[in-house]
Structures are given as structure tokens and as C-alpha cells.
Length: 510
Image 1 (tube, rainbow, N blue to C red):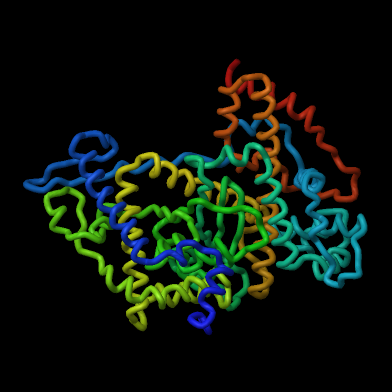
Image 2: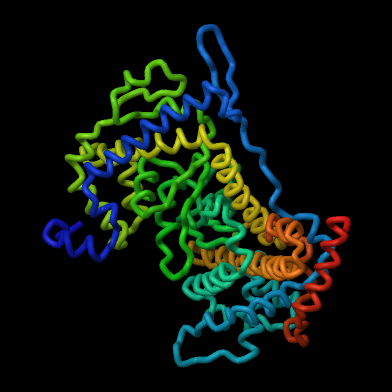
């Protein structure tokens, strides 16, 4: 970062990050004490039998330990929604617009132009056409809108900028629902990030071969950030790109949304050599789910002499190079600052920092710092069954979103048909917007029903409602002939709450 040393105080004040201003010696002292306490505590709880969520098996003179893998729960299409009256996607979008006025975010490419009612109808038509991979020509044959009208609207209103603004508005509205914070895991805003593979019909720069996912075809991989079931952000990456190098970017690249994360989980593909330390610098607890946790613990390091722990079951394999981190701290600070100030592509910086190419002392120090934080996390993961459950629950929510997103895409074929990377990205954003709208609709109903049951002092029912995932689509009609010009069906929330209350009583067999 240019001029960092010259303007260090000014830049650090602008960032307002206590961790960057704190002497690195004090930070490492805290981490040393935390790690030492954890190593002792983890082994003590295993030896005493207090940790009942670890399996021990003797093999000769060696004790083999394993962790029971948390069960996956089906977060998608809960049977509760089978009884809810079906609603057409057109009516659902009207309802969402009444709640958060998302149509206002669709601005004309020429600022002086304004929307009329016909424009709004065509915007909905284009959104559904692109999200379901029907395309506007196919939509013109399946609805009461003309192809030329939709084509003009698509050119004037449907841009990445407007689509993201609409999705942000829907996400912010969902975050304002009373039920949203009830979806927190361990009282924390615990999100997840994962990529989903899609075929592309036409060849573009980002579409690449992947024998595992596409056979002989090509495809792309939308990388989506989920919090409390809502798709907060998405980034289109090639199937050849490593997911973990885009985690920082997807978390902090969108500054237009008023939602913060306390914790984020990924699968093994979301990990790299620097994500622990980069997210820690932003006060986000990184909690990945590793495929082989036992082999990963062989990388645990310590800031104290490892001979202190040689008799323990779970122990560090080496001593971390504290001096290297302290010596290189002045060179690490500008890296953190550049990422926080978004002076250049965040994913490009992360890719270089995580790469094994071009070794340097600064990079080695960053990796060593990352290893210390990873070691602390691994010890926490072994010791805390609740943490493991929360990590699995967060990832399950991401998988449920992918199921919903896949069903929307497969309404008219699962391939992206865009002729360029930009078109594919626009179609994907249309799909995210539609999925976000469906989730928000379901969450609005559940939030209202939860409030009703709490007013009735039926807290057991309210707790049941909080556990229902809003990711469901069996009551949403995406197919058929679309009549956008027909008089809108208004949803009476009060009437709907009465109906949902009856459905809930039957569901709970009361």
C-alpha cells in the first residue's frame, strides 16, 4: 500500500480497527494464553469423560479419537408448507413490492426517465423469464406481454447494479422482521458461503470444463453468502477458481447492505492459508467444516514449548514462530489496510497471499499468524459440540438455498443461456432475486404467525415456528400462462394469519 508508513496514523484512524492499532506483542500474548488454556482444557475434558461427544478407541498402544459427524437436517420444503394456499409468483412479487417497494430500485439507464405501470409489469416478466431460464422470447409466448416491450425494458432497467440494489432492499427488509434474529445460531449472526455449479449453454470466458460437475460441458459457479436463510451476496466465479480466495470479497465487498456477520462457515473448499487471520482482522469468527478433522489437528501449533504437552492426546506438533510475526507486523499492517480500504481487487490480493508461489517473509508471517488462529479454532471445535452443530446448521441453510435456486433454474432448463459473462451474471442475479423474494414471503408469514402465538402466550408453538425454515417453494406456482395485466390478487395478511393458525394447530395435532 503506497504511502502507508508516511500516513500510517491517518490511515489506521480512517479504518478504525483496534486490532491493527494494538501492539502485536499484546495480541500474541493473548493468543498464547488462550491457546495454552484450550490445549489443557480440551485434553482434561476428554480424559475425565466430561466431553461425551468424542469417540475413543484403543489400537495397540495408541488411542484413536474421532468426532461423531453432525447429522444433516433437511431445511428445504418443510411439510408445513403443503397446507398453505398456493400463490403465483406474479402475485408474490406484488406482495413483496408492497412490503419493501423494490420496484423503486429499478432505475432507468437514463436518469430523467420514469417508470409507468406497463414498465413494472414488463420488469416482473423479464425477472421471471431470466430467473427460470425461459428467456424473454419464451416468456412472450407464455404471457400477455409483448416481446418488444420486454426487450426494451430489459435494456433500460435490468442491470447488475439495479438487480443487486433490489436484492439488498429485500434482504434488509427480511433482516427487519422479528423472526430474523431468532434464526441466529448461538445468539450470533452465523452465515455460510458455498458455490453451486451450473452448466452454460454458450461458451464464455468464465465458463470452464469440470469433468466432475459438467462432464464434457462447461459451466460457472455462483458463490453465495447466506445469513439466516437469506442470500445476502453472490459472486460469479469460474469453476476453475478456488472458492476460499473469494470469501473475504463476498463478505466485505458489498457495502450497500446493513447486515453484519459475527461468524461465517464454509466447507473445506472455502478454506485457504489466510482466511482465519483476514476475517479475524474484521472481527468475524471463521468456523469452517473440515472433511478430515483428525488429520487437520496434526497441524496444531503452540506459542509455548511443545514439550509441555507431549503426554497429551491432542497436542501441538510444533512451536509457532512468534518472532517472525512480530518482525513482519509493520509489513502486515498495510496488507490489512489495503483490503479494508478496497484499494484493489480483494480476491486478487487474497489469491496472491494464499498462493505457494513467490515465498516471502511477510507471507510466511501471515501464514504463521493464520496457523495460530486455525489451531485455536480446531481446539474449540473438538471441545464444543454446540459449535459443531451450529457450523453444520449454517452449512445446511446454504444447501437448502441451493436446492431452492436449482428448482427455480430448472423450471425451463438448468443451463445459463447468456451469450456473455455479463448476461450470465444478470440471469443469475435474477434467480437470486426471485429466491430472495420467496424466502422473504415465507419469513413474513412465519414472523406474523410467531408474533400471534406469542401474543396468545403459546410459546411452545412460537418456538416451533422459529425452527421452520423459510426456504420452501412447494406452494409457489412458477409455471403456466403468466397474466401480468390481470387485476392483482391482494394478500390479506390478517386473513392469512387466521388460516395459518388453523394449519399450525392441525400440524401440531392440537
